[in-house]
Image 1: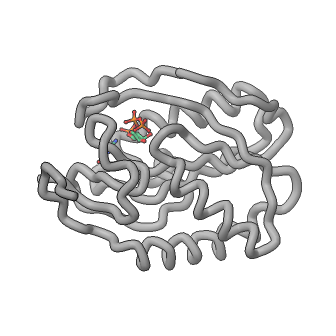
Image 2 (image 1 turned 30 degrees about the vertical axis):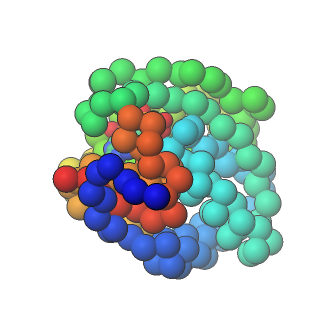
Image 3 (image 1 turned 120 degrees about the vertical axis):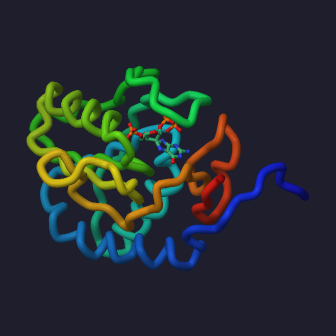
Length: 176
Ligand SMILES: O=P(O)(O)OC[C@H]1O[C@H](OP(=O)(O)OP(=O)(O)O)[C@H](O)[C@@H]1O
Ligand SMILES: Nc1nc2[nH]cnc2c(=O)[nH]1
């Protein structure tokens, strides 16, 4: 089977799994009480699946819900507008929320999602992404937990797409 674009492997599969285990070690002590993991579709799907398994192995069993947000569609730059394609299926009022996404870039998607959840009455929202770009917001507006910093390149694989393709790659790669 051939690929029609050159993809450089940035994080191989074994390193990805090791980082997700480390993340679960850091997150598990925070997730006591009533927590919901909210996964941002579509890109966060593989990350969510592996992180949920890593948490379960540590005896942590939050509820899982999803929100489908879109701002890039087929472009490699944000449209500047976050669209809700589908909302949560359960209430988050008075619950802690662990909000998961694959990549933190302009920060627009996570910021939108966090405010959306707080407006629905979430008690606390902890943000967590697999990776972040060098120019992504840091500090107050930064992400609370992140598995690793990525180079300033367009990423694909492990949920991340280029015009809908490559989400199934088991590693993170970069396109030139
Ligand atoms: O920090 P930002 O600049 O907002 O970029 C991050 C967002 O971009 C991608 O979503 P996209 O809109 O491409 O949808 P997808 O999850 O379906 O790929 C990615 O999954 C993040 O949600
Ligand atoms: N697939 C993909 N989506 C993104 N959304 C924001 N940055 C990126 C990126 O580098 N790759």
